[in-house]
Every structure is written in structure tokens, then in C-alpha cells.
Length: 420
Image (cartoon, rainbow, N blue to C red; front, side, top):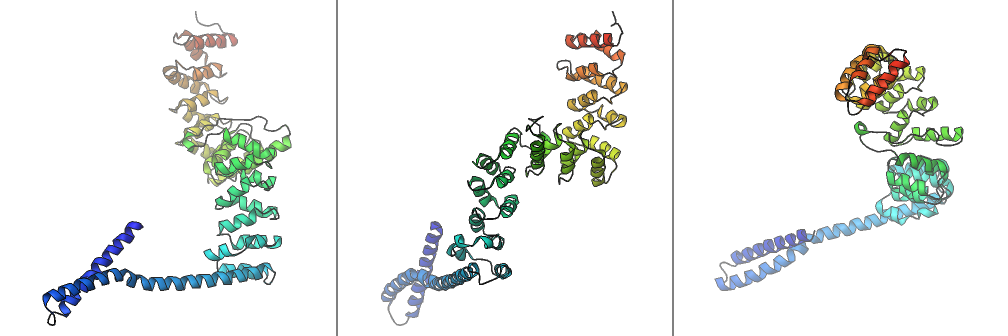
């Protein structure tokens, strides 16, 4: 800004000097000799050069003064209207209508006494000043502000500034702190959980949230699971309901994947806006057939067609979930048994619905890729549908002694002697 001002002054000085010098020098060309003309032209040019910035700035100065006077007058009118409104001169409808047509100005916002708004008019002014975060922040954090208004504000994503204030405010009700603990903003959620008024539900939500890794879904890994989040089943169900409404998608994603999620919670989650979450709900072992049909209808497919489509997903986590799902039958598992991802064909090997031909096919791939990490091989050995011929091959191979021993035990368990 300083550089611009200096450049402006230089420009005015050069322009003024040039105009003054040339004008005087040529105007007196026939009246004075060249020496006198030259002297007076220099003096005139310097004077005009120094005066030109003030000449140019004067109209702007006058305009600014008039604008400032106008703004001050508007602010005074706004203060007068505000004082009349809070004194009961106007109805709630009149107040809303007035501010809808004439939004509060910047100066007016600083001039009014927002703390003087009576409790019964707080909701009216919160709605009227919804674009003035500073004013709404004062109103929403007042102890007498109705709970339903505080909860509504806590849910509104564009209220970051005063939501942060609510999370820190020791007068914020526990119900609001629970809602804020599900906020997308990590700092807001943390502050809400640490608030001295925070109930155990908010603290538990933060505990779960902190144990989850927030990342792009393609890298999403569930890093925590809880069989019993509360001693009371009623409290546990209430917490699940809060997690379903969490503003952070990765938390709801965890709910859709957790093996402990109850059917009732999955039913609530079937209304989630995320298609990926709906896919996990569809595949969950605790999801009811009715909910699966509802989700299939959302994708405009039948249940079987949804499974086939999910087999084609680029998301490894989705394909693995399909392979684990109890509703996946022969044709679906057959496709996934040929998957290139270790976790996907491993999940097929663990699925009770896997058939002998699939397990034999997976064993050939796993033997080549998995001799140092016997996870998939162990699943094949443990599966009741694994052919004896596959177990005998495992027994005879020498690269993995552990699998060889497990295969021998599996063969004996079927009352067959291992090959000599």
C-alpha cells in the first residue's frame, strides 16, 4: 500500500510539473524572454506538481465524508429501530420482515446492544442476524437461549465461529455438547468433549473418534472395535444412534463396518447420503433382508445384481466385504476367488459358502504368493469344504512346515491318513 502511495505521488509530481512548466513556458512565449519564461515555468510546474495530489484527492475526500455521514445516519436509524424492537414496539413478524429487506450494516452491528435482547426475542434475532456470526455467537451462548435453538445452531455447518465458542462455553447444556462432539471440525469436537459439562456419551464419542484414522476412503482402515461401549444396553444403543448422525463420514463408515453394529442402527444408517456407506450396510451380516431390498432399490437393482456390481468395485475394502458377507453365494464368490487382492481371495477362503473348486483354485494362487505368510493357506486348511487332495498337497510341500503340520492334522480329523 505504501508503494502504491509513493508511485501515485511521483506520478502526480511529474504530471503536474510537466503541465505547469509547458503551459507557462508556451503561454508567455511572445511576452517574456526565454530566461524569465524558464524560471517562472519551473516554479509553476513545481507548485502544480505538489498541489495536484490534493486537487485529485479532494473530491474523493468529500465523497468519503458524505458516505461516512450517510453510514453514521443509517447506523443511528438501525440502533433506534433495534431499541424499539427489543422494547416490544414491533411484532416478531415485523422484525423478521424488516431485517430481511434491510440487513444490518457493519456499523449498525457494532452500535446495537445485542446483550439487551429479551429472552423471548432471542430466536427471532438469531434468525434475523443469521449472516452476522458475531451477533449470533453472543445470542446463542446466552444461558437463557432455548435448548432447541442451541441444538439447531450446533447442527448448522456454516456456524463455525460461534460453534467453537459453544464448545468452550461452560454454560453450554450437555445435550448440545453431545451434538458438538460429532462435529466435523476436530478442534470443536475435542473442546466439546473436554467441557466440564460434557456427559459420558460425548466423552465416549471422542474416544471412538480418536481411535479411528481419518483419511481418504481408499486408505480407510478400521483401527478400533468395541463389543460393549456401555454397561447398559440402553445407553449403548443411544450412543450408536449418535454415531449414526455423526457429521464425519469416516465415523459413520466405521459404524457401517463394525461387526458389533446392531440391526436397528444399520436400519437408521440405510438412509445415509453416502453410497459407499450404503454398500457396507447392504453387506453387513446384521442387516435385515428388508433393509437390503431397500438399499438395492436405491441403486435400482435387485439384491443379486448389487452383489455382482460390488464385485467390480475399484475399492478393495468393498470387494473384501462382499467376500466376507454371508449373503454372497457361489456365483459371487467364484468371481472374487479370482481376485488379485490378497485380502479379497483370503476372505473368500474364510467364507462358509466357499466351495471345493474355489478353495482349490485359491490354494494354487496362495501357494505361489503366500509361502512366507500363511494366512490364506491356514484359512484353506481350516475350511471344511477344502478337498483332501489340496490338504495332501499342503502336507507334502516343504516350504512351510507349519502349514504342512496343520494339513496333516486336518487330514487326520477327517479320519484319513496323510500320505506316507
